[in-house]
Image 1 (cartoon, rainbow, N blue to C red):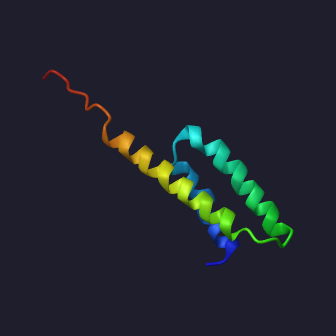
Image 2 (spheres, rainbow, N blue to C red):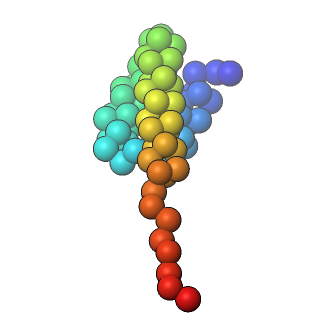
Image 3 (spheres, rainbow, N blue to C red):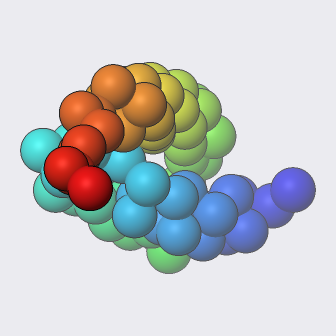
Length: 74
């Protein structure tokens, strides 16, 4: 997978992350995009961001799994 495709995948994965993590991750992705535009290596940065995105997604999934279930009287 090319760096540009990986960058696009990570940008689309932000919607599944915790809201508090989205802005810092978006800034890091912008930094990676700038590095790619300047033909500088960004593989290490993209790997770090991918790890952070995965951790945020798993925390968001865990929070969603533990939401209270509403119960209504019939």
